[in-house]
Structure formats: structure tokens, C-alpha cells
Length: 513
Image 1 (spheres, one colour):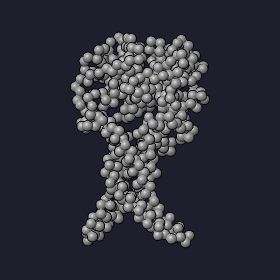
Image 2 (spheres, helix red, strand yellow):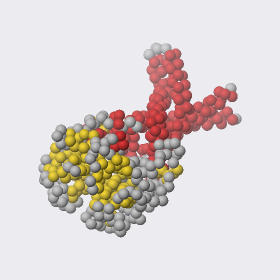
Image 3 (cartoon, helix red, strand yellow):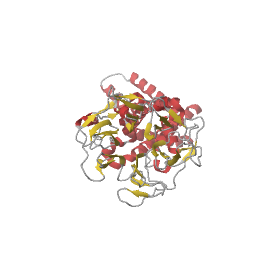
Image 4 (cartoon, helix red, strand yellow):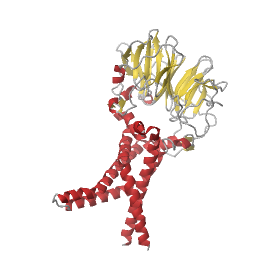
């Protein structure tokens, strides 16, 4: 009776293992391949893909898709536009656009510009892969950073005779662009040594939680997933293939042996790595909406000896910085919110009782706004915020706004990715989908020239990210693409667990026999 029950249970498990596995096999291959590529951004930074080969919705139109972040006036006649498309020179009358990227390494990812500053007559650019200065004699961009300034820079601000350089982990300053001095940011008031659950799961999923060894292990899991998918498909398709061989009068002995070897290695690799694959997949499922929303603000203890177990309270948290001359203080935006720091960075950083809504995707605009405070823009919209009074006003409606508490909508109808002003006072804001739009009326901003479009492909890393998150299918299913990661992830977990249980029952039957 017991063996009959076990046989019935195994039969059901085989259905859960076979059919979901076949249905999601192609998507799992895409997950695994793109995941391995995402783990090695610097190695593939020079590889680009023409946007002509991408699905609809990936074409640049009117400086959309975060192509343009802002602009820096360099004289009365010229602006430098910058963003994910690099740096482009445009005349103040907005009639001529020319390339200004000479000197950056090959690959669009190497000219992803987060901030641009004119420091003592020298142009300085903060890119994803380091700090650059513009050398006028050679008309080229040249590296200006040291080892601590060669990765994930996110903002620049000028304080007196010093250029302040913000990375995701630390703050530096320089007075001559030759010597870079690290500054120790004190912890915030009431600091508890914890890490966000989101960043913990993110680093667990990528392997970064355990350094380069962890990344290699996750790479191995990616290749294991590819192997299990291909051998599983072979096992399913094998009967039809061998039948065709027989119909041609060919012996099937070798083919049957191949089937046994294929199944043996599929089972062996599967039961060895099943637990690790389930853990990694579960972590990934919580990194995208809708499961991301309930964990976005959760805090957990730091795992000892992990990549997060460091003395720096701002590790991977810093995002934007501004020096406020009137209050003689820094305004710093982090993944935990906004903080105020005194000029000497001597006291603990203090937070604010009221803040503008900022999307989990980050703050894209942080600019002084007349005498009313700051203009703050993100995928949650654009707001005028006075840090001293705590007032927060929606820029477009003029109504008071409050930072949402708990679970809220991750994006608004105004997905702000940038803001710029021209020399004649015209103001523009940049929407992720619609591109650059007039804020104060006046002349229309020039569209992207053919040269800009042709020299702005999508990097292989970004293409892999679109595949990994499912956004590449948005043109087919619309907003339902948000369910891609959780549905495929949960299906994969079912396939892995059912496969392990099938092996477990077979192993025990063999042992009892």
C-alpha cells in the first residue's frame, strides 16, 4: 500500500517537474545567460548592440529612456548635454549639436555620465567607471581618478575651492584634480548597524554578498541551470528522436545509452545544486515588483563576514550631494533618504522630518530652486522641497505632497529622469517615456540628430538587464511584464523542488531494494 502511495506521489511530482519545466525552459535559459553577463559589467563594457535589433520601445526619441540627464553651460554660447548617451555640445540657440566624447573608452557603457562640473576652468565628468577631466590641448577626456574613484561614481558638487566627488560608498575631495582625498562621513543620528533586506537579497542573488568568490559561484549556478534545462529538454524530446532513428533502419543501442548517461548527469547535477538554485531563485523573485514592494524598506541584521559586514555605515547607500552655500551645509541623498551634514563633517548626519517622495529607482534631479528650496525629481514625479520648513509641493499641480508611508506605487505618471536650463533661462524637464519637455514655455528643445542616435546603441550589459527583468517583453504584454520574474521564478522553484523529490524517492527505493 505504501509503495502504491509513493508511486502515485512520484507520478504527480513528474507532472509538476515536466510540464512547467518545458513551458519555462526558454525563459530559464534567458535568465541564466543574462545573469552571467550582468555579473561582469566591466568585462563586457565595450560590447554594444544596435537599437535596430531591439524590440519596439527601445528607440531613442526626443532624448527619452534616460538618454539625457542635464546640461552644463560652458560659456555664453555653448551647453554640454550629458547622460546615458555621453556628452554632446550644443549651441545656446539650440541649432547645432556635435560629438564631445573623444577620449572615453569604446562602448556606450563607458560614457554613461552621471554628473558634469566646470571646476576652476576644467571640465570634470563622473561616469560609471570613474572620474574624467577634459584636456583642452588634446581635446580629449582623460582619467583623473585613483583606485577609489574608478567605479560607480554618482555625483559632483563644488564647495569653495574644492571639488566634492561622491561614489556609492564614500565622499572624496580634490583641489587640483591630481590628489584625491577621502572624507569620512559620520553615521546618521540613531544609526543601527543593519542593512536593507532589498540590498541583502540583491547581493545574495548576484553573489556579491560573498565577494568575487560569491560571484563565481553564482556564475556556476547559471551554467548549471543551462545544463539542467538542456539535458531536461533532451530527455523529453528523446523518445521522438529515437523513433525517427528507428524508422530510418538505424540501431538505437547507442542512443539508449546516451539517454541513460544524459539522465544520470541531469539527476546528479540537479540534486547537488537544487538547494542553492532554489535559494538564488527565491532571492531573485523578491527583487522585482510586486514582491519587491513589501520588502523595499525592510531592514535586517548584517551577515557576518559578508560583503556588507564593513565599518562604513554608508556602504552602497550614497546617491546625490549638493553643497548649500546659504546654509553652509551639505544635502546628501541616500537609499535611506535625505540627510544634512555640516561643512566639516564633524557631527552625525541628521535626517528631515518631511521629505519629498523619491522612487526606489533613485533621485534623478536635485537642484536649487529659486529661494524656495530644492527641485527633487525621480520616477515618483517632481517636487519643490524646502528642507528648512518641511513643505513639499508637487511641481506640476502646485498641491502639497507627502512622502507615502508603507507600500505605495513605485512610479508616477511623470517619470522624471532629468532637468536642465539654457543660458536664456528656458527650463526643461525630461520624462523617461516622452523625452524632454518645456517647463516654462518658449522654444522647443531640438530633437536627437541622426548622429546622436547612431552613436548611442544599447550596451550588452543593459540589454542583458532588459532580458533578465523581463522588460524586453513589455511591447508584447504591456504592464503584465511585471509578473514575468515572479511567475517564471516560482515555476522554476516548483520544477527544482519536484525534481529533487523525484530523485529522493528513487534513491530511497534503490536503497531499500
